[in-house]
Amino acid sequence: MFRGQHAAPPRHNRPGTGLRPEARVSLVTRDVAMRVKARPLGVNAEDYRDDKKISSVDELYPGSATITIPDDYHGLLTDLHREARLEASRVLSVASTGPLLANQCCTIVTESSGKVVLAIYKAGPPAYFRLVRKPDNERGIAPMNVEQQFALALLTDPEILLVTLVGRAGSGKTLMALLAGYLQLRETYGHLLIYRPNIEIGQSLGYLPGRRRLPGSLRWPSCRRARGTGTSSDRRHVSHQETASERGPQ
Image (cartoon, rainbow, N blue to C red; front, side, top):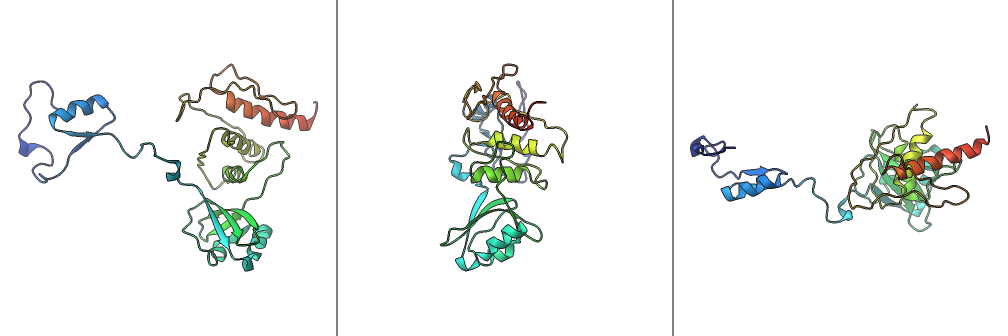
């Protein structure tokens, strides 16, 4: 950048113009003021494009796929239930589906009988499907739909180092994340750290007060010590109080 009254360097000394005079040079910056100053000087200025918001949620990677197999091969679902895993080639050889990605959540269903099995595709090698069992309700909290089952299965998979969950507010993302961490405290980990950004991501929804009535005698308490952490504290309180109620008075 040349400032003040300094003359611009000769054209043949400018980077790139001597070797590639037809090249298009752009100034890429987030600074709006710099882009405004650059354009009157004839410098093409633009913002970053890769991190722009998408126009529709349909453009996001869904993370799931439905695999339909003929009724004659329903025995594959039985084998998957019995062994908890199944070679992917046995399923993909009789199903018409596109390429699968590692750790993709798959719903394997028969054509007419409607038998359904939930599984996670593991790329291997060799590639295989891992059965997703519906967890029991021993903690008082359990997945209520297919999406929550897949989320809990991914979050408790030790081979997956990072899981991102996308969904509407109240769909159970935070609750499944806390439940997955809590279930792994006894055998795998010794501490559970919970972080939440201070700045809201996406549309501003405000802060939830945490006074919603739950079935039975449970109640979500308000978290007044740290504004904006009420939802995480409420969900953690539900898990802890459910477990304490099972142990009984100490």
